[in-house]
Length: 538
Image (cartoon, rainbow, N blue to C red; front, side, top):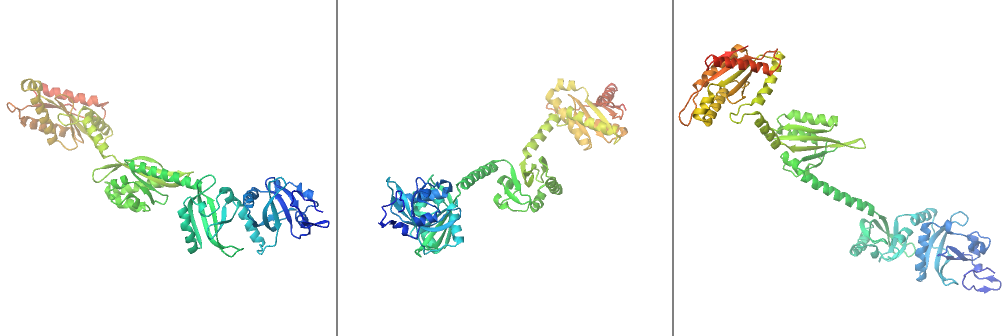
């Protein structure tokens, strides 16, 4: 007689247990403790055990995968609830795989706990090796696979689906949006397959899943069923959300910058441009419409905006070829504006991925700089160059004379008895005389000559590329023009005269002081000669 451990009361006929007469294996398995509690003779043969006690003492834990444990954990509440489960199992009693269709039902053991009564039965559905392998793959896959009938009632699910959603049994329960589930059922009746990304219910809360669904036929009943596979994509969705936020933040920053930005790929196609770029180049189309545009064509079409069109295009090509960062290129535009351009090549892990152009309108700054430079180099009363400008220009001319490029002359002009004019008529009238002298110089000199006010009533004129004989002739002409000019004074118009000293820049002059001292000596010689006259020292 077979020894029963926690077995049901066996029906005994003579000396043989009735269950031992069965040709199909029957056993009782303790799911909680992972132990065998009973096996009939056929089961002993199936499990390759020589005696019942050997099988009861066998440790099944090392041979059970986590997927198997989850699967059995799903069985226990279903069996306790009265469900009978029919499924194919693969066992490895002697290390070799054996496939068996099992009918599992609930059984109360002697200690009151629930056990699982397993009957190996003949199945109307025979599975070939490929089908068995596919079934095992589904059981051990991390993809959540659930099968529902056409009404949305759960038929079976793999361990991954069980672990993710143990207490939720219906198709509708799987979705956080039940209205979506309601729409999907009739949609699946019209379409054999359906894929979507949705927020699904999960033991850990709501999770983003990629869901694939298809219609199939239940091999047992022949009725329609729905097979649903799910992959958790929550991490990807979180990353995509963060990327969208970062992208939008970057868009806000780009649009808020007072810079015209143009990002090109490695093939010179526009990736992105901002509104400031369109405004700078008078592009009426929205910046997003520039995406994909060929930047070579764009450069050719806009080069007419610049005072040096060909140089504008050539410089772009040079920067793109050399791929060296350039922080400041000043571009003069035909309409009088100035743009500052920066070029930045983009490298990722030493691999070139395009470049960024940044354009900034610096017209206001350039005009301000020009104004400040003019103020710093101009006498505010007469508008002539001041002493600082004179010294800088004289240095340049002296270097050219020393290098043998040309001759140059220098005039020193001083108003005769200017203190008496100020004392008798007032400084306002004296200022009128200074302005008259400045205007006379401007009107009677070449564009290349530089008249300067270097002191109160002292003026200098630098005359590059002029021989000393011609310079003396110019000085006499200026002397006459000044003497003939009339100052429109408040009380009574008046005239004044000047004394002019003439000299030349010598290649041997050690510094500017040498030439100015000769001009000063010549001017005082003119004063000593009776004023209103020209004296020269070469």
